[in-house]
Length: 342
Image (tube, rainbow, N blue to C red):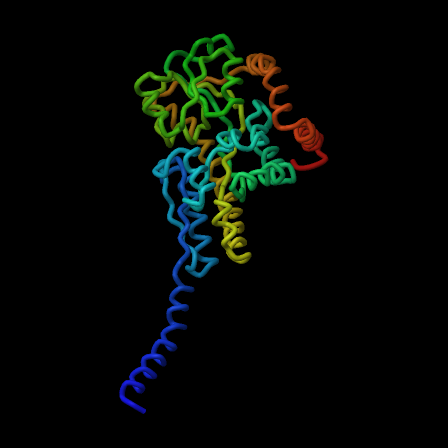
């Protein structure tokens, strides 16, 4: 064998040995998950994303790693949804309300006074109705995994206490970029202004808007008490968040990897709901300590609000489909009669 031939054979053998090593290196390279969210790292969102990330890394033995990116650093909920649909981002958690523009059934969760308490919400969201609504997202390039809890929404403003329906008249109130919220608060007499959450603090600070509505936890973690004086406990809408995955990316995963993500999402959901409810119980006291004036809307005024929203309810039923609307109402009747849930 010539020297050249010997060199060639040796090089070929070396390459053959390296090929499996290269394949192994490829196999062990962690799969990176960019998980975006709107609130800061110290919020209930931030804590729950951390739980998700730890569960994924443990279950995958380090082969899947989550990079949590909070404070709307990847954009607003709408921008992140578009990034997921296009495959430019892997995961996010955000409001169901901003999905209504692409999946009309999501408007169901925006129904004012739909749920009387969090237990009712858990049963409906985690059951067949919640799954049915979530499944519609796949047509738009998104995969829904679980619902988290944002909580019951309450009103804040810098103008005056809200003791009766008429006190809402003319207040420039920021609402989510969603027609149900827009029409609901117009019906209640406010000057409703749709605005991305990422722009809200500055808008309140500059007086572009005078008020907003969010759960206690978000009001506290976003430091709205610095730019809002009055908090009215209205519990007007139960607000869920939803954990989303890019369908383009999801379809590239193995069944085992998909299961890891779903299991971790469920674990984070259970943690997040408990965490959110614990925090909400103490948030009102904390907001009072921060200087906010807090009052609770009376049952009489709550009933007046409901009565002002008759047209909105009819519109939601038409929008989401009367079959889904009636199915939801029937399920709630079962829960309240004690036939299902607690």
